[in-house]
Length: 296
Image 1: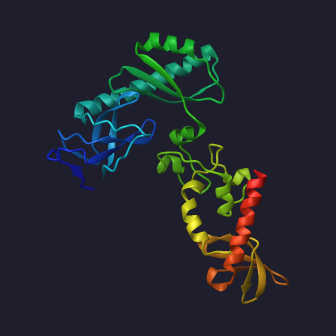
Image 2: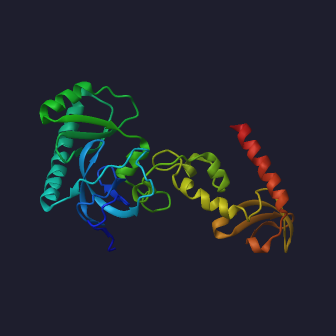
Image 3: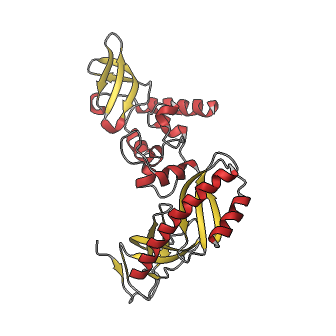
């Protein structure tokens, strides 16, 4: 994709989407009018944790985009061949630091699991990302690590979703986890979304490998709600060519409606093959919402 920002553009009318492979997230930065930037370039930027090197994945028009409400910082420079070599060395040093960290864990008997290790690009800070179900007092460990590496040490605890994102796995669909492949920011997901999508609310069906509600239910919910407008409610009476029956379940994305017809059992239809009262549908859904809110 030949998309770049030339030095002739002196204003900040574009933002650069930069991907960081250690914590596998993207953040936005302002273009620097002193040089050109193109997709797949490695760039040096300043983050909350210090200097870092990231990869340009897209260039967008500046429409007031912010990082978690914070004003955007400017890209410092495009990484040189020497910068990239230095970054590879830092990654190698970080892996070695991780082994030392794991050995020290045995000494302090801390209940935590190391996920990833990272040096900032200026090598002034060494960050250990870890997961733990407990609140961990690691002050003595930090002091010893600081004495060994002679840089500022930071231990950063991550949640179960970030752990799944950084480690990676396959979901129940057989594909790479959404958080690993496409999700940059975790949005809230609710049981209500599962009910609206006709998904079983059994924990084994709606929980991801992280133990939390599956992210896909969140970002697919808008599409389900749009399609749902044309379909009957669960439990609603509908008319088919084989008689009148009640809707027991639906697979809206595949246009499948399962209707229980007295004397004939469960039958399968498409939306075009049934008729139903839309006013009755609205009343049923309203009662279902009230029932759900009362139970919660």
